Image 1: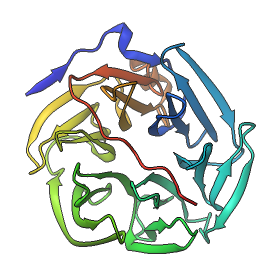
Image 2: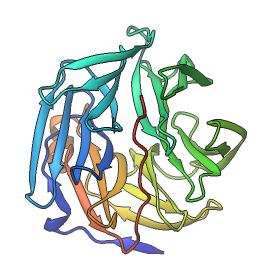
Image 3: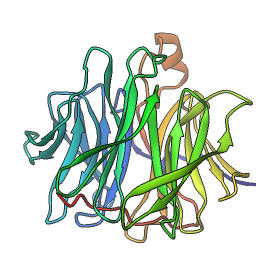
Length: 294
């Protein structure tokens, strides 16, 4: 089983986010873009210059994605918006999200330019959330309902499978996926989180088809084979590991976001790197992400 040992060089950005989430690699700018949902901030990390730029957006942001033609889009409770360099959100399509019960959560674009984004119940127990698909023409389609916390998304290297983390249900699901039409079907549970601490949060897929799952409450990221076997673990000094993605010039570095949300003073003293961004060279490469076509 592959493992990674933590070194000081593995901490890319120290203790910056309350709820670090949804990292993506922007190939245009060669930046790692990630969000602090609770802190209402989008970060742009330049790994060459080793600088992290913060852009306050003024509301919780679940995820971001690069936009065809340049710039970024963001998923918030108001819908999908263009994100300006100053942090202003210019709404492209409004989505009716009941802010008293739900907020936007993880999201990602497929290679056809569709933005897949889900919501989560604020009480962490009510099945009031959904997974949506926002097409290039700004049409919004509901793909799944009855979810508590919609989370990590990823596609197989051949784009014939969509992977999806159903956090509260404690499993990673797999769908048949059609890139041409954006349809999904034949849902099945690929990975069950029955044993040990933690639940599946964000994810990434590598070029070998393996699935990397951030484990909230589990102090780690786990790597699974395409058939769902556990083949590797990255242990971290932070309990709440939120998401991961591949980045760097050759997509050969794994970036991992974490959280210090609701840690007590004593807990934070024991894990002072909560909210940090980590960076590892795992000896494998990731897959390019899609750009929103709207």
